[in-house]
Amino acid sequence: MATLDHHARELRMKLVYVGLGLSGRTTNMHYVFERTEPERRTKMVSTVHESGSRDLSFSLTPRTLASPVADHALRFELCANPGAVWDPAGRRALLHDVDGVIFIVDSQEERFEAAQEQRDELIAHLASHGRKLDDVAFVIAYNKRDLPNVRPIEDLQRALNPTEAPHFEMIARQGVAVFDALKACANQMLQRAPTH
View 1 (cartoon, rainbow, N blue to C red):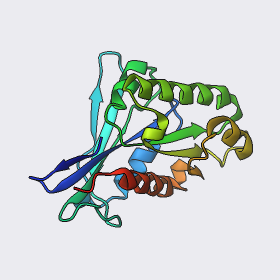
View 2: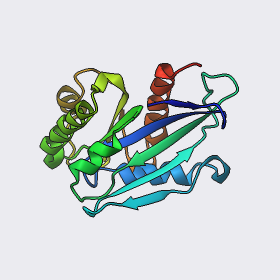
View 3: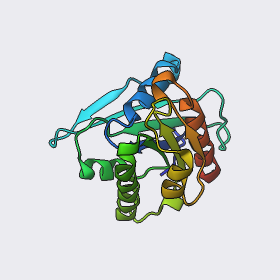
View 4: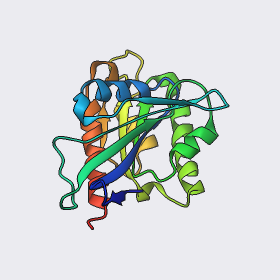
């Protein structure tokens, strides 16, 4: 949850990239990291768990967004549980105190059912923290739109986005819509942030 650090004069918020293994979470993280000025970001940290899964995280202070709290800078912590290792407990833990979620969907036809299961898992993990999807900023990024075997956007929207959250057609490895999705989620987070 958003926290105000009056000593450091920062409003800190946590954004998590969620999605299937190999859907593009890590690609998003690296794209944002590599294109953020070094003085505006921390080092990227990888934490390995006993299960073999890992968390990837870094924080950044955006240049184009203003804090709703006077004299406090914004600091976003970006996190993902990347890779193909299936670790529901690790994914659930990562969602503790989350302010925003970017749900990365692998648009390929053969990943459609698994994407639906991943959305259900996200809702269950939030519920384990006493929260609902409506309690967090939420954006969907339909990734890999450049591949020939993708599911039509209309089908993906109908199955995965019944609440009509902001959505983007993404090609993460080319950077297409990576920052658009991040900004849309960050703006939602700021609308929900404490102001004092």
